[in-house]
Figure 1 (cartoon, rainbow, N blue to C red):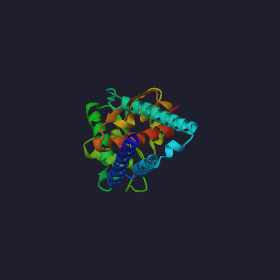
Figure 2: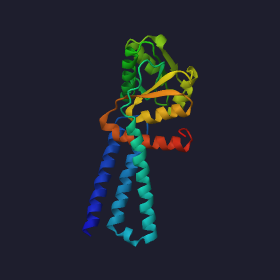
Figure 3: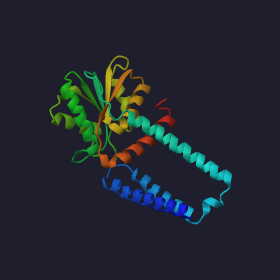
Figure 4: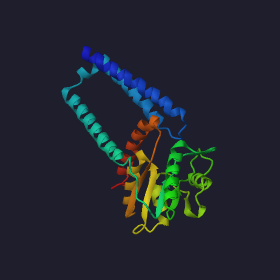
Length: 252
């Protein structure tokens, strides 16, 4: 009985965390509905609490119990492996004197790039200042909740900080990371150019492997920072992004 109470308290705490984090993510108006995943997580843990409280687990056949445990264990194992891959690229510094940077887009607002995108642009800016012969492709189309294309917003930001507009190429049709890479590749000699993918640390692994899958031979990642308060959300969201690209055949 005491063991069940501990489980119930743990599930309730997890539920409260998920609902609270859902509200936090919703409040930043990120332009996505991923906050609903945290809401769903809160509902799941509430259901789990009721499941344990009313002794429903003990009523399940042993075969079904083992099947549930096995599926859950496999899910945790896959999650840990994927997150390990993500973390492995979080400190990527890239290489000096690259031919091109590809800066992956993120939300732009009326007042300018979102905080996530500013991290990427400031990292690209620092690299371009230090490597004067490198050109930059800013990649991202216009979402339904954006005043103009992400590429235009990135172009304006970098030019405003002093980067020569002749060094910047705009790719303004893409709608996701895979298209960012594919549509930017038309500006490259994919077999010979040395290319850096500039994106937030949690996104580098997928960006680089998408580029390799699409034929860019010499590619490295350049990790921009991200907001520590939203890193958990970013890491979980990226897990689903990698699984989606694996299923769609974009990574293998």
